[in-house]
Amino acid sequence: MKPTTPAAEDYLKTIYAHTEWQPEPITPKVLATRLGIAPSSVTEMVKKLAAAGLIAHVPYGPLTLTDEGRLRATAVVRRHRLIETWLVRELGYTWDEVHDEAEVLEHSISDRLLEAISTHLGHPRADPHGDLIPAADGSTARVRAVLLADAPAGHSGTVLRVSDRDPAILRLLADAGIGPGSNVTVVDSATLRLDAGQAHPFSADVAAAVWLTG
Amino acid sequence: MKPTTPAAEDYLKTIYAHTEWQPEPITPKVLATRLGIAPSSVTEMVKKLAAAGLIAHVPYGPLTLTDEGRLRATAVVRRHRLIETWLVRELGYTWDEVHDEAEVLEHSISDRLLEAISTHLGHPRADPHGDLIPAADGSTARVRAVLLADAPAGHSGTVLRVSDRDPAILRLLADAGIGPGSNVTVVDSATLRLDAGQAHPFSADVAAAVWLTG
DNA sequence: GGCAAAGTTTCGGGTTGCCTAAATAATCTG
DNA sequence: CAGATTATTTAGGCAACCCGAAACTTTGCC
Ligand SMILES: [Fe+2]
Ligand SMILES: [Fe+2]
Ligand SMILES: [Fe+2]
Ligand SMILES: [Fe+2]
Image 1 (cartoon, rainbow over the protein chains, first blue to last red):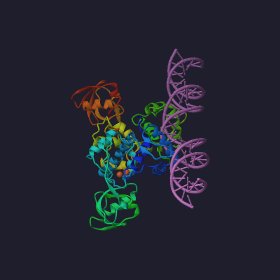
Image 2 (spheres, each protein chain N blue to C red):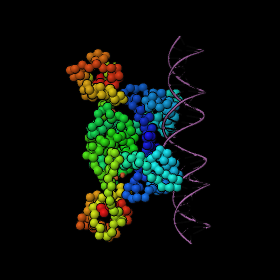
Image 3 (cartoon, rainbow over the protein chains, first blue to last red):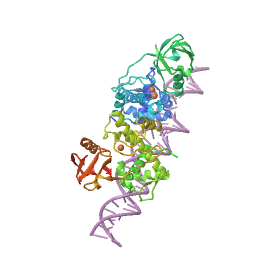
Image 4 (cartoon, each protein chain N blue to C red):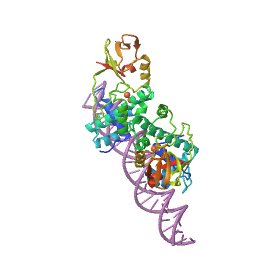
């Protein structure tokens, strides 16, 4: 089967990522927005990916990965998250600085290097943001999680994951001492209590980026 | 000034590398061969690089770097060699395995990551093959060296550098225990004595890859 | 049901970087 | 120094990705 190009890898990864924490498949419009390109460009690439058997697509319908497509996607995600973990653990990066670097390197490193890094790190299961790292065979654990925005007042849980899409949110949370593993209680729709200690107000943006145990 | 593409970086790097251990500037034909592409492709890219002020070129003449071009080239060489050093020192690669990986990564890592790696390694001055690593400002030390093929019988010296172009040669030398820092004596045009110890026959290919102190 | 808005695709273009084949310039050789 | 060889450039094409504008579906709403 034909090797995937960096551009194709980004399409597959983004299609995959969209269903990682919610069920609905992605549409071309949303995909175009996420990738920062024109919808017409998506149509074109979608045709190629469908022809290559990596995605299923009926005209005007949503985009879903085939088994082969999902395998390719998780391979990219594995690269991305291992690179992020490595940058934080070995090279002094903070969790808000690693995403962009990983975005590039995920398309460049060889399988050999990837596994060397994984071994070097002791085969971590999650990246600095709490995202699970798929295994080399593509298998991924599934975790039940509740978006902070959807958590009722009084809900108590552990922070599982923070989306790394917005570095500013990551810096904000780091300053508050909140990250994966933190035990928190939702005081009200805009306030969080950390470890039965200090209360922190939070914005809607933050609420849409933080995931807690159910 | 316009950022360089991976392809352009490879052109500049290869033009630079050609004059690193010998004076004659490279010709389009040789450059095409080194890059593994057609001569006409070189003509095309050369026009762009000349227009960008990175190389000097008169039709049917040789290719030489401008100051700006040399700066860009040494930046790529710095990346390449730091990556090679990092792979060997931190990730268990042997010196014959690193070149191809570095060939890709040199175009992908950010300045930030490059300097983090350099710091992590304690700012090494040479890569695993003995090639000097240019400083961040582009400055490079110059070393007088003699190609083993040009060394007279009886010549004694230290191995300064082994070309990493042919991994087989690197494996051969590693097996013989010969590398940068080894003290050797040229017995005759096909035999080398290591540290006044064991004698090793060597081929013309090896003789063209090993550089000794003068 | 009918129509406007939103989403998707088609179409014509543009850039980068590569190719082969053919033309042209430079160099070598007898 | 002329013909042959080699190097270089020109010309025409191709694949990967991207774009905007226009056409065409689908959806949402009165
Ligand atoms: Fe990320
Ligand atoms: Fe992440
Ligand atoms: Fe190398
Ligand atoms: Fe090297």
